[in-house]
Image 1 (cartoon, rainbow, N blue to C red):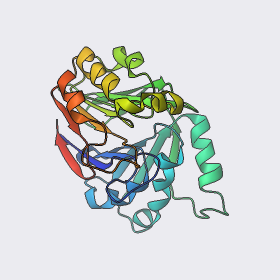
Image 2: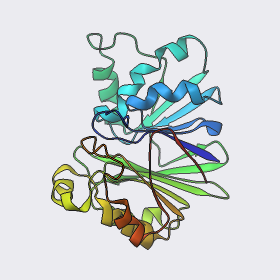
Image 3: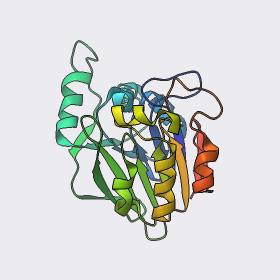
Image 4: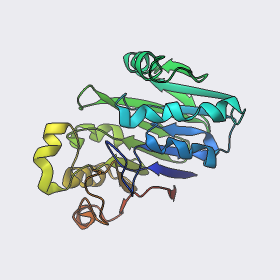
Length: 244
């Protein structure tokens, strides 16, 4: 199975990273719909899509307005958008209000149940996280592998039980440790606590994503610090493809 990191930045795009979106093309599963969502048509392998939103901050939903043409030209048959009920209502009321984007694509908005059955005989669960306005972390367990996607969350250690033993942990790392104070102020994560979570949960692999767009260099989060704690750590980059 392969996951594609369509966007690995936070807040706003820069020359290196677009904002959050991850896709499992062979299953039609997508997490978040940031500015990188325009890349989805290039990776379509299914006629049906399931989109799981962590929350409704603009850098995670604006791409929903980018998919009108693929739907009108019959590139897909159905698109389900899952999220918390209040967040979905805000998206429909504000992002797709007539003054901002007058044509609502034919999405099916679905308030998240406790579990969702996803392609490949997988079971998806979600967890409420600490972040301004609230956010969700996701985990999918298939018969032979597991994946967790945790972004826009402070104090990763609080989510230890939820990600225990996961094969692939994709986790935000907005700041390096030297900016830990800003992580607390903004409800985000920094390097050492995320690496500790991967180690303590006995994850198989850690991918760091949702990087501060003000830090566009090759090592914005001190990757060696994370790798010293949890060696099987990779810094995510846009369009990176990971087999798991």
